[in-house]
Amino acid sequence: MDEYLLIRGLVSLILILSVFYSGMVFKMLGQYMEKGKLVVFVQMIGSLLVVLASIVMGLAGNSLKSVFAIFAGITGTFLIIHPLFRYRLIKFSKINVTQVVLVLLSSAFGHFMGLHGIAVLKTTGIVSLLLLVQSLKSIKLADPLLKILLDVSLWLLVAYAWLCNPAVRYVGSCSYYLIYLIYFTALLLWFFSAVIIYEHLRRWL
Image 1 (cartoon, rainbow, N blue to C red):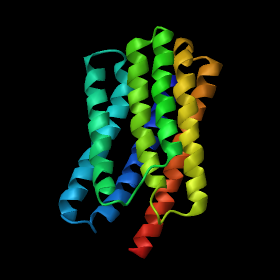
Image 2: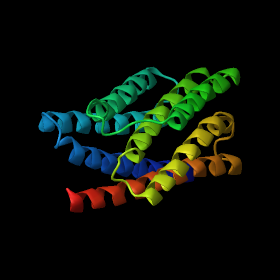
Image 3: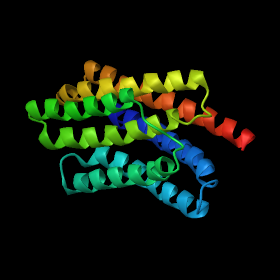
């Protein structure tokens, strides 16, 4: 099997598991809200859309499928975090806003490099993931150590947003895989934290 496809498959698996466990955490919180069953259903749909969007973004390139992926990613993220915002279970800090702005600016950098559609795609995908990780970190029941790990994950995603644009031109090279390792590490930290938070909530709630 081509090593590139193998690595992408592994990363996609970690991404799916990260979104799944984060969705389970939000599901446990959602069931205690007004109209809890509806909130949980909406969040699960949102989680599926984010996973689908992230996978399509990795495979579609610059095409009509990419437009669908952008729409699905934004819609899915909104469906997941909106109920939590509404009931004030999560909140974003100035640092979180800065991280989102930095990722959005990376799109302009990609545009400058001539990667117009690809830069927008990657930025949209990373912003969606960034918002999910930020939402998980802002849960008051999260352990301080896990919040540190999620902080590291967030900044790694920001770094990857800037480095992935020039790396696109060197797919398959050593430097490309080193940059991709940043993304993989960010997902691993998110996955580990999501699993631990889920287990804690399952015992407490």
